Length: 226
Image (cartoon, rainbow, N blue to C red; front, side, top):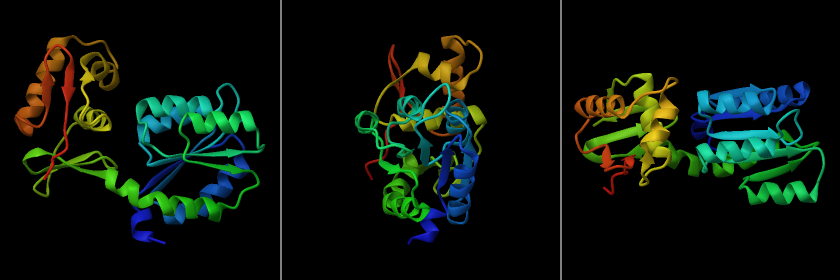
């Protein structure tokens, strides 16, 4: 087991049964950088946006919104985040739906926490490759800590600038529409001029070529090929 690699990862557990959530957290806590718990899907989605976990472990049956509906919303934010589903029943219809929306693994309750740990250890190398993204001009962005480095030196970013990089790199090589950027990184309504000023200041802080403009559409960041 690659303990050093696991220690870099953050896990989100979404489970409305307190005993199960506590049992799973106790079993995983010593192996990972952070283990967060959410008591329902609404809190789970909020914690996903705030804490940016590497892996989500979720129950299916929860009040108001179930785990599969939450998974769909998470996949809209980041389709590559592995989702591990827990279920008290081997419901064929729900299992097929889970597979269809792209869950990574399905465990039937009661499950062995060691099997969950073993599965995470198996997929951890893939997650580590996603963590740090090499960009142009010697820049590297760490998705886990939302930090930017230039030739190994930390570049000071504001919270909004970190969220901007994180958003564009979740859609690397794709144009992210200006409207999506504004809705994601600002709580209030902002105009195009404010976004352009934000981009201009960020380019002055980093590099003119790092953030690419797709005229009339939005912005994108492409990883370095070197």
